[in-house]
Image 1: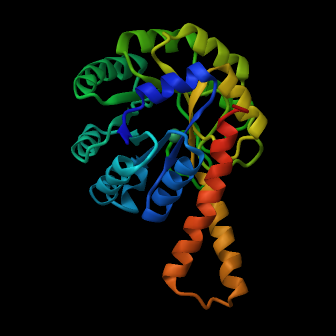
Image 2: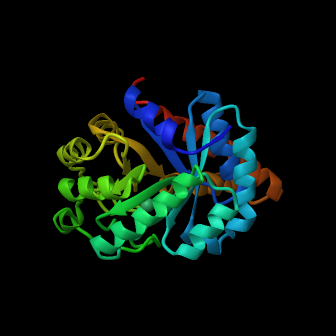
Image 3: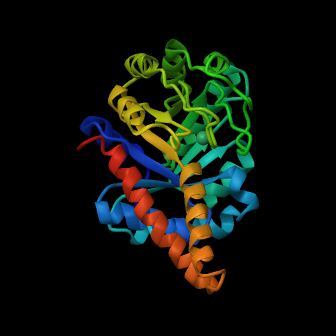
Length: 290
Ligand SMILES: [Zn+2]
């Protein structure tokens, strides 16, 4: 069933598990994510990233995401990932998205806060949940989300979210979720990330109860660290890059075994089956032993 993210994140935090938020830029990934969530009987968030719009426009994949969510046996939230311009956010709303990340993290703090406050009021009247970002998430060479590239464990610290600022931002804007920086980055990690779990705890403690803490760049982070972040108060985990690369490697082997002799629909089906199993493993990790 199609839902926004309010109730599923509320329950997740109460029960001490995390909700996976996975990009679905094609039908195979969409089927795989929803199929995995249904087999495990857990809620899930599917999202379309503004940066993936060059792969497939939101008007093509968005209505399919909404349709699959409506038909699903588990609660599915259809979310916009890193919507950074207002027109794009409106396109997502017109497609029926139930949740929007309006990412103005590169704007000055006051401007980010004012605009999110105004937007959240309108979105909530439409029963749409809102995620914002505070601190600027860093990226890796092959990722396109913006932010600093080529970070080190030391340099990344200057992007970390300040707990008091997060609390002010959440109180003023009323956003449902806030993406914060504490050591993760988008894309493929050049060296293993080191998460500042104490910072997650401090942010969770400072923020109003109704605003959930979000981890971006979840793929590539050790299972133990992900689970520690969930226990510290993260209830939404964004996940994509490592799954997408693992699937390509698998297809590479699949084709090598057949010396390239396969129908395209067989390749697509193989990708779907591989990703569904992979995502089941990921969603099980997020259940945090529950
Ligand atoms: Zn992100």
